[in-house]
Every structure is written in C-alpha cells, then in structure tokens.
Image 1: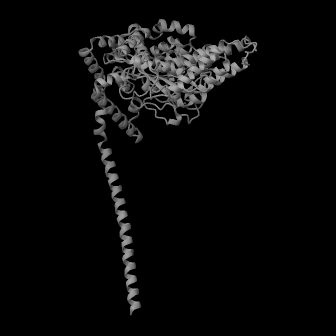
Image 2 (image 1 turned 135 degrees about the horizontal axis):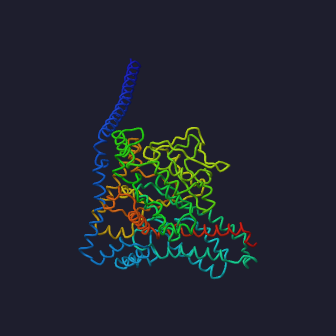
Image 3 (image 1 turned 90 degrees about the vertical axis):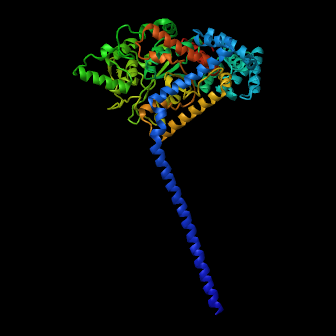
Length: 602
C-alpha cells in the first residue's frame, strides 16, 4: 500500500510539474504575441500619422516659415547689438557688406579684439587638439631648416600627412574667433609650406652634404603628394544660384587654394567646365569679368529665367493652349521654363568642341562631370580624362544638367580617331535620368569613383541650395557662432533642437523609402566618401525674390559676390587643410615640367 501511495504521489507531482511547465510556455507565448501586436499597432499608427507629422515640415508654407524663422535668428542678434553695442553692430554690418577678403579680414580682427578673442587665438592651449604635438613639430621644422638638414625636414613632413592631425581641423576651433583659429595652428601650416619650398630650392647637383640628391627630392615630392591625397572642388546644383560657384572659385583662386581636381553636377558641371578649359593666365581674365560675357544674356532666354512673352509662344506641332499647358507642366516638374536648343547652342559656343583629354593636356586640371544613371549597364557615371577621354565636354554638361535630361533624349558626343564628331555609345541604351527623380545606391554614387581614380580624399563642396542651409550646416564654419549663441541661449537651443528633429524625421522617412525622390534630392544631402567642408553662399530673404530675374551683368556680379562671401569665413580652415597640398602640387608640376624638358640635373 505504501508503494502504491508513493507511486500515486510521484505521478501527481509529475503531472503538476508538466502543467506548470506548459503554463510557463503559454505565458511566454502570450507575452510574445502581445509584444508583436503592440509593435504592429504602433507601426500602423506611425504610418497613419505620417501625413500629419510631415505636413508642417514638407508643406511649402511650412518650409517657408522654417526658413523665415531661422533667418530671424540673425535679426534678433542684430537687434541686441543695436540696443547694447552700437560699435559692434557697425562692425557686423561692415563684415556682411565687405567686397574683398582683405576688407573682411580687417573687420574680423577688429571684432576679435572687441570680444576678447584675440587673446584666445594667441594662447596655444586648448582641449580640442594636441597643442604640445604641434608645438614640437613646429620647432623641429624650424630647427631642421636653420641647420640646413633637408632629410629631417622631409621626414617631419612625411609623418604629418594628415589633414586633421591631432584634431587641428575640427570645426570647433574655427567657430569661436572671427578672423581664424589658433595662431599656433596657422603658424604650423605656414611653416610646412616654408619647409617644402626650402627643399625645392635646395641645390642637389652636386648632392647636398647630407647626401640629399635629386632622386631623393623626386621621391619625397611624389610620396608626400600620394600620402596626403587630393582635394576636389565640388559644385552641386544651383540653377540661378549656380553663379555663386564662380564666386567660390574666384575666392579660392585669389588665395592660391583652387584645387586641380574640379567636379560638377547639373548646373555646377557647366561652371566646372568653364574653369578647367582655361590656363592660369586665362583664369585671371575670366575672373576679372570675362565670365560676364559668357553667362549674361541681353536677349530673352528661357534657361534660368521666366520670359513671359516666350511662355505664350507656339511650340512646333502644338497649338497655343497645348504649348502653354506643356510649359506649365514642365515648369512644375523642373522648376523653370527653358528652351533646350538655346541652351545647347550657348553651352557649345562657350566650351567649344574640346574633349576631356584635350582640356587636361592643356591646363593640367582634372574635370569630372557626374551623370544621373546607374553603372549596372556598364557605362561610367563619372566622366573625366581617364574614363572618357574623347567625350566632348559640352555634351557631358548637357547630359548632367537635371532640367535638360528630364524630358528630351540626350546624345553625348565624342571625337573619333579621325577627329570626326560622332555619338558616344558605350552601351546600346544609355539610360539617363533626372537628378530630381534618380535614386542610386551609395555604392553606385559617382563620387565614390574619385578616390579610386584620382586619390581624392577631401571634398570642398560649393552648395548652391540655400533652402537646406538652416537644416544641414555641420560641415560649415560660422566664425563667432559661440559668441553670438551666448547672447541668445534659449533661441540657439530651440534652433538646434528643431534642426536635429527635422533631420531625424527626414532620415527616418528616407530609410523606409517614404520620401519622394523629388524631396529627397532637395532635402537629403549626398553621402560624401571622405572628409568635407561645405561652402554656403550668404543668401538673404531678399535674394530669394531675384531667383526668376533674367541673368544680367549686374545680377551675375551680385551672385558672384555672394559666393565669395560664403568662402571667407572658412578661409582659415581651408588654408590649414589645403595649403600643403597646393604647394606639393605646384612642386610636382614644376619637377614634371623640368623632367619633360630635360632640365633636371642629376
């Protein structure tokens, strides 16, 4: 009986444990099911609420309100300055209205003196960068030059071929003072140039007493140029704001910082081509006013402008109403009326029948033009003297222009072996898209080919889309930003939070493929395969009223000056990043020329 009782109890305990075990799994299953239901419910509510969440951000009225609100930050700052510091207000006005970089720099120095920022520049200590390392390297370069030891100079430069070495290029170092960054950093960048020129001017035939000969000089220049990498000036879009690109290029050229590699997209491709087909002497004349003869038009033209009499004219094969309807639809899709025949004739007359290879052989500048198409078909989407040496530049510009490629079929032309101009057909079907509707994967971006082909690792972006300036401005430099932010801490905090919130929402929509391609091309910045600095034109609200004006000489001068003013606040950072590269490029071209002419003695 006892055995039966024990067996019965064991069975009961086993069944109870089994039921408990099943209840536990049932509980886990119910919890998981509840979590899944909750996730689905939240996701469905999020999707249903998207139109209401995005309406304030993406509606035209909301965007205009955002721009006006962000521009009002400047108004509040100036109001405070007028009320409390009249002299500071006058200096700020002079800073904004400066017409030359020298004038702008003098006013910036005066502002640094008033705000006490000159002392900050003179003091090398800072937690933002390793000032001890920079001081040590600066002293080493000076001592090596004083004792006439080129080997130490070369080794010191070689070990510092990093643009952001010990964080000397972080934006925080350039957003405090108006006239520049720490004097120690600027002195180090200048000493690198002095040391490199010392090596270039050194007589190496017969060899130097340290054993430094001509071959060592050649190896050093080539190795340093390869190790540092190259910069490219990237012109992005613009339409009428594209004239600001010329101002950006002129400001860089006058300070000796214009890169040899220039890339253009859409309207920026035309500006890049105008620069790359000209030698240094021709560029001087171009920036002095020759661009006005090329880009200004006295007679009505539909590209970049609204000519109301031309809108009501007839198109071939269409009546008056059909022609007007087509132009209105085209304007809604492409943002302006245009006559593609007039555009083609003008671009061809300005650029002539020059190929990429001919332009590079003549000027030693590398022109890159990007196309809105996928590389799956086999055709390159980055055109330059390496990938498409015989393609005519003017036809590549038209293919890259977003408005031109949106509707009409584009033909890219090239020169055959006999010099005859024939269509360029690398594949049977060259499927070009509009930049407003094209969406490529990051691996297919044309910019990703630049590091592979040309050793480009630094991008100077001339951004001519002023409506995204308040939202995407991390890579820009705003001298004196911290000083002004302290005056309006609450407003600056709200501005920063709004910018982060908008960017986060746009990124979320883009990750779910919910953002239309048109809005994505306007509001989402392109992934850059390398470090970058963004140059933004100083656009005011009043300038937005001039978008549809016909490009005359006066309006072009206005936009070019706007582009120049957008470069001046970043000039100190650009010199620290690029001055050694420019000097290495000049030395390399000089040595190459001597080798070609057999003037280099061994």
